[in-house]
Image (cartoon, rainbow, N blue to C red; front, side, top):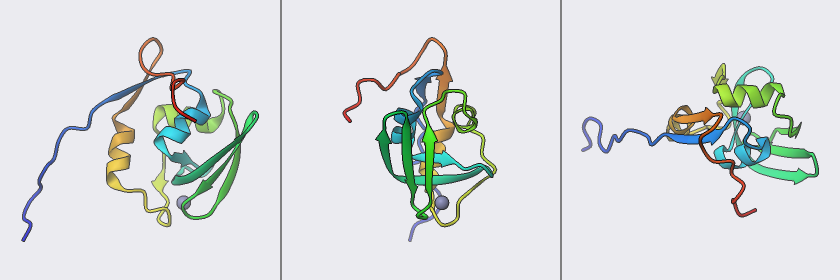
Length: 116
Ligand SMILES: [Zn+2]
């Protein structure tokens, strides 16, 4: 029988640059805030030029551009969301990781060395 909490470690903070490319960021964190503020889990991201098609775990598709100033890019950097999509079933650890993610102007990864 499991009692109480076990293996609770503080989540390691991760730093990204404020100007980290939006597509790379989404590919990394696999989360997407919809227009209504619902956080979806991303199943796949397909990048074509300046646009990307996101497919969520609840089978919704979003076509987005890579603008750093877009609503969603701002929401991601500020880690705003109004709720979590019940169909996507975003696990708690992923949300914890997200909340431990920090965006800095002069410090952190630009995610440019990722293997695509
Ligand atoms: Zn969803």
